[in-house]
Image (cartoon, rainbow, N blue to C red; front, side, top):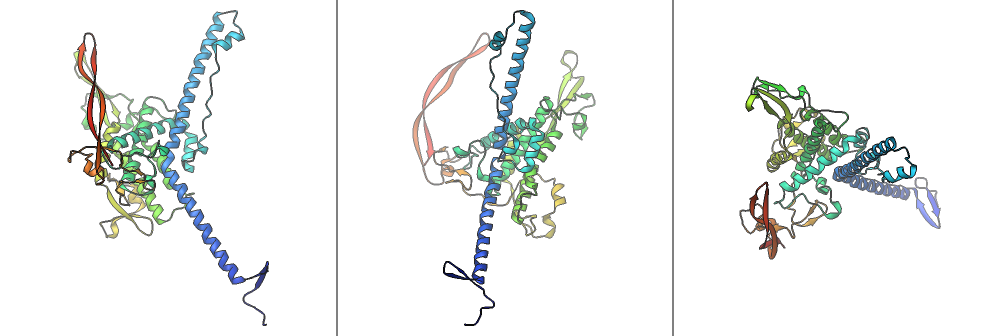
Length: 436
């Protein structure tokens, strides 16, 4: 038998393995390894998209509780000092009686939060006193999202196990995800700017004169700046750094599609912040004899989160679909001209306040964990076909059922001198319609 020069033989437990077979086995193991790593990467990336504000909310609650306990300890220490100064027979036993053991809170470190990207963890460590503001801003954004979409099939709600954030709607670049990113960014900006004015953050204060509007002719000449308005500039910068840093992480490897999705997220984040900044207006207070308005003191005031939600709701319906080219740049779907491709410089100089989306939205009729919806089964609807929550639309042609509920409300209210309103409690039976 001639020697096998090009294909060596290996014998293992009586089985002959050629060098070619070893190469094929190695290739198969390599592709299996790459598939597993890719799957784990996508799951971890989806987890980041879903739960960063949930993690910050958890941390902010712990920080708030720790601050309350610290204030309680300080108050008790002051009581102990006062008792010592006024009682010569002060004893340690009495001190223990006056100062009960106050439980301590173990605050989760920023590096332990699974929902934050590496860049967000670094900012969290540097500005830990900002995290309650970030968490509260995110909570307000979620509440506003739920109110704006209360009559829609997708009503911003999530399964119970995901309570506290909007769920996996971020896995797809839909118009719902576009609204979510914009309202979240605006909510964080709003709360940071407001707390700066209240003096609750160490690294910022109320807005100085540089925050006044560029068009000063919107106010008469007889006015002075109060110097303590909502600090929209600082809130804008911090929100941009904290919220957008996850979309710029170099440690997270992205393909062209992933890079384009990050650009879309940053675009929608910027839309939320710019709308908030554009609608920050001066508010004035009159000073003068007998209530006259000879002199006005003015300061910058942020719009309400409801006002921002209303604006973003209208932009939700007019969101524009974009495509991602092979280089990971955004391009409007209805244009084929090369100049419609958005370069990085054009993206940074964006003055367009329209929301952008990549993927078409599902119908949100069924319970689907992947798309981030709990379906419409059991949702209350209206039999009025013109109502925003019409059963014909909300129930997805599955029909609806009715039942009688007892509604408790206040009625027959009267003004009683002085000075309160007294109401009776009325119980009424009403017919309620729910989707099958």
